[in-house]
Image 1 (cartoon, one colour):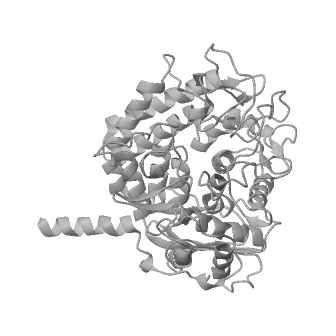
Image 2 (cartoon, one colour):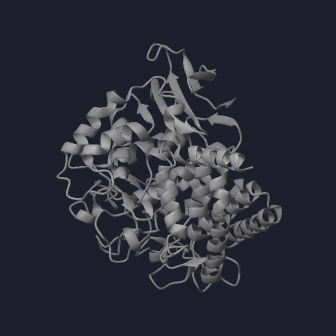
Image 3 (cartoon, rainbow, N blue to C red):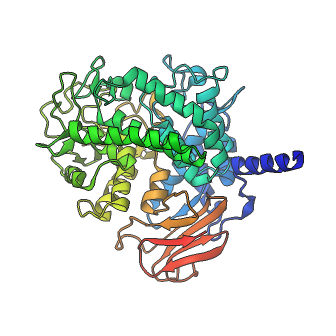
Length: 511
């Protein structure tokens, strides 16, 4: 029995650490992309160092990240830039590794300069790192780092952490880790219900505690029911139900599925503005805020709305509403109070925030994968993702900060130290799960559904992706001449061809 236990624990450890020695990249060679890191290192005077300084960045990236190649240089550059920047935010503490949001110390942060507002983003982006210790440690510190209890500011901001933790499991397939966390996630959900649940069943939040200061719809002291927190709590409930099923706890799973169903019905009944055909904030007085804000797309991040609500997405491509030259605005451009709160104190009344952009693009990919609809197209998805890529430059160099002007692309806090390398969004997860289309799932089927328009790129390769313990390679080669691996869309696991299609389309294969 003792020998069996040692073997079991060793197996869990191997899954947890995500050993990439299982295989190696099939097509791409890491050395081909080192020039990006050399350039990024030369761009700056490294004044803040955490666990992995610049002189160790390339060594760390070779061991940890997927590789990507495409004919559009800015996509490729920003892909490696975002891995280079997230590495800056890995901090080593006596409790293990954690992820920070700002490199400089913030007086409202928790211990170790941790801030919970973008925890979901950190998990979604970090789930593709090969070494699982970074996220394992970060999650455990947040939920048990306070003498076995959660950190004191875990619920300082609205959060979809349970959803993110489950979606990370869909990548690494480590059921033991999420099952072990189940009591913590249930306790967290119960605390949210105690603190933020209205008598009618919806959840409320101050806009600032939604990580969204100075909105048109709310205020720092207004207890409004918002599509954001209700989307998060729906996603968290569905995640806990799924983890409970993994733990063979059907009654718990049923309970949280009922909670999720209740939030869905209430959101569709109470937060849907039928005149605007959009999910909007419900004020304390039980009246609609009557303003379209980008948070109205968040319910699709969690696959919540029924199909008849997909009409909301017609607003996304409208240049009079959300579609601006340099990104997706956080509020309707036609509203009289659009960008009327002044500037540069973190306003969410219209300027473009990567935090929200990455949420909207994740939600959009979910819509396109899970609903039969014609409201949005792969061309629109690509255009918006391309604009996101183009926005991540400042004075000609790669840059990601807090928020930017929707018409000029100017980063509104670009000259402030706090804004550099702002770890408050995703990008590489969007490219992997959206554009390239690797759709994580719990079973032994690998699903790939690229959202790349057929007329855009003749080739791309995503390689060295650690997924369900295997190294995945996805190749699009329209002519077959670029990679000499055959014509069309191909998916490999540990170097073995699983499936090929001659055109860009959804393909599935058994792992």
